[in-house]
Amino acid sequence: MAMLEDELVKAAFRGFSRIVILWFLSQKTLSGYGVSKELNKLTGWSFHSGVVYPLLYELEENKLITGRWVRKGRRRIKYYSATKRGLMVLERVRELLKLPVKEVLKDFISEA
Image 1 (cartoon, one colour):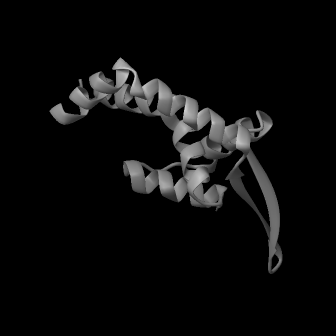
Image 2: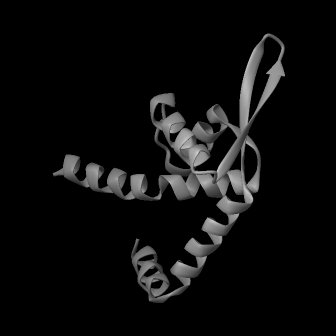
Image 3: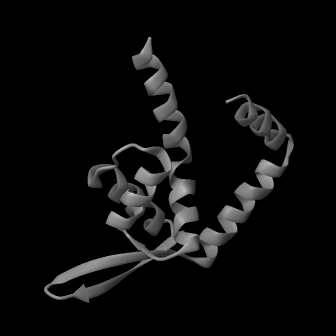
């Protein structure tokens, strides 16, 4: 039964992962590794590059985030930040959550 519970929790988070990443990147510029660390702090789960980078590439392809390469010594690191379009999407999500869904989520969270 615990496996089913874990899968349900992970599935719920997967549904929000793009929005959570977009929100992180609206707050500050982060590398893919930085995004992984923020996700880990938020959830306590380990997020590998095979999970994080495809989401970053998808968000970038849809012009919700932009990446900028920076040279650090011999390494090149790509830092991501939210675009205006990404910020508009976040605002739309905020507006959606202000609808009756907000009350359901508030009740759901307060039960925890």
